[in-house]
Length: 282
Image (tube, rainbow, N blue to C red; front, side):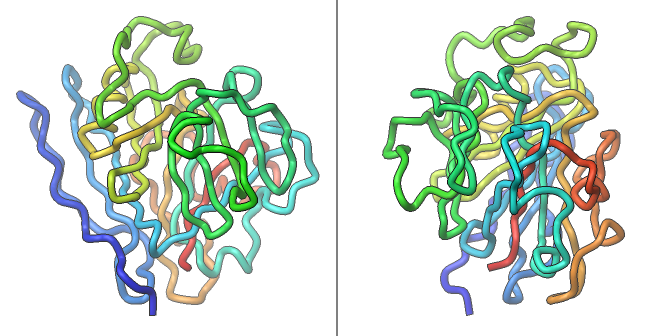
């Protein structure tokens, strides 16, 4: 029996003047009889489109970085698409990684391979060999290379720090925070963060500028958060609700939000060439 799962997340307060969302519901298969993923939606300031938010318990789930032939390249990789039947037996959730390189402006380390150098100060999703994960600026707060580190996926700089959006965010800046389709700041965006008690939080949604994404991550309780991929071709979050011990398939998958090009089938496609992250029952 797994000990001391995190308390279920408290409902999120809506933004002033924005209606709908904030109440959590469980998603994906349970782990040792406990929900390990909770989902909700929240409408960010100045928008009418709800964004999706997923809360994941790292005491019930193990994180794993899967590497792609295009992003980051540098294979062969053991953990790459498609997800194997063995791994699918415990699969609970999967979501997109970050920008392609060099657009990510950072490094990539997994399976003992340093494909791109890790940049000091770079926003980093760090996964440890025990399956836990965190988000922070590389080289600060104890985030350094050690024998305990399994993977590091960097993408730009932190978007949320000390529980607040970083200063100076410009909603019209499409150069610092990634090139967008048509040059508009309002596109599908995604991000990942960590709460004070260690939960991982994923956020994505349509028609988001960078200020709205940061506001959502902070409102969801992230003390530190970073951007992941953007545009509708690359953003995706899926939970899987197959019976315990039965390999998950695309038919068991449910997207947190509709409207993206990718789906549950993406992670089981041999041709999928970009990195992604899975969360699996311990």
